[in-house]
Structures are given as C-alpha cells and as structure tokens.
Image (cartoon, rainbow, N blue to C red; front, side, top):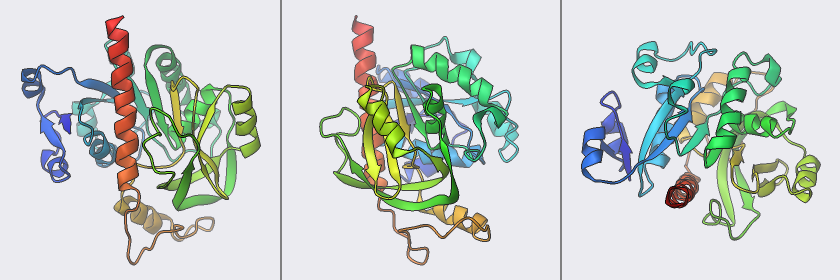
Length: 297
C-alpha cells in the first residue's frame, strides 16, 4: 500500500487513508520495481482530484509511481498553475520512457462532439500511442468515452444528466480485472452521455468488445477490448461522498439535473468504497503480471 510521492504531495492526507508514502530515494532502498502509471488528469481542480485516484491506487500491495500528465491544448483554468508546473509533465517528455499503464480521467465535456473539444486531437494522439505501447489503458467516464471513440464507437447524449449511485451487475465470472468484484456492486455515475445497448451488444457478438457490467434502466457501464487493452468505465468509482455533494450543490439549480439517485444527501453513505478498491487493485495486479511476463520474454 505504497505511493511513491514527491515532496509537494500532501502526505498527511494520504496517510490518514492508510496509504504509505515514500520518496523516490526511500523506494529505491526496497529494491522493488514500482509500477509507473501515467495519469492524464483533465478534471477541474486537478490538484484536488488527484487524491480521488491516489487513495484506491495506494490500497494495492504494489509500489505505485504516479506520473501526472498535462496537455498543451488545455487551459486548466480552475487548477493551481504552480502545482501543475511542479508535478505534471507533457506526454512527449515521458512516452518513450517506461510507463506500464495509463489512466485517462473524466472531463465535463461529454455533451460536446469530440471534434468540438479543443484538446481532443492531442488526446487522440496519446491514446493511439497507448493502444500500441502500453499493457492497459483505463478510461473513467469521459475518458472511457474517449477510448470508445478510438474504437469507432459513437456516444449518445442524454436529455437529463445521469447522476447518482447505481448498482452494476457483473456480467463475467472469471476475469483478471473484474472477477473479484461482487455479483452486484455500486458505483457513482455523473454524465450526460452513454451508449446504445444494441450497439454494444452487436459489437460484442462481432468479438470487438467484452461487456463487463450492466445497470438496469441505465445500460452497459463497464466494457473492454477483448485483450484488456482498453478498459472503459463510464462510472466514477473513484468519487467520494464529498464529490457527489459538491456536484449537487454546484448544479442543483440547473434545469436538466435532478438530485443524485440512490444517495441520501441528508445522511450520505459510501456504499462503493470496497468495490472501488478491489477494481483498482485487480487492474494494477493485471498490469503488474503482464508487465513481468513481457520483461521475462
């Protein structure tokens, strides 16, 4: 349960969640090769969102070195510029160095066509490279939609925002990444777009994707390419209670947004933390074993 952390990180906040932080120098004394996970963070208030991923990543028994990636074409207007300059790198500076896997976060742009997103071209180039060179890429919410776009799958916009915490039925039993999840597990959703059930089902019949999770009256929320190269998670398993409350307060007066479903604002409870930790841990273990196998060849 260790994150290799530069000194600019708030170690206390992580350690309160039982996540051990080591400096790079301390990590080297353990003689363990850490997994280098690239994280393309395009969420608002990037520095605050980091902890949403560091908490579940830090629950793995593996050493994790997060490599925070920024875009040239994104303004990051809500984020701390000094923090970005100190911690984040551009993709071209690290893509030829060893990254084991990549995470692409969500972004509040799912209502727009990809061509209208100012940084889409840059993300497209990153994802095409990752598809060819990295063991696995995990896309969360809009990040998952970006992976689907690379695969030629077109999203559909919703009239109302899908917002709340929903049960997901696991569709496969033996699987290296989702096999450890409960048959039904909870996950927050916060998005204006998704995919037609029939389109995804036809793609699975053609062998192009594998459907992993389904939510009644919502649709397929978790699917992948058959070789686990792209993992598309349309939910926000990394969210905590405060994030859902914040989004509700921010958007409660918007006409097309309802209160979060299956979530009591007056008595909020996190019903998805354990499944979040299992999912991220098993994804990291898959990356680790695949990376170890490749390195032994």
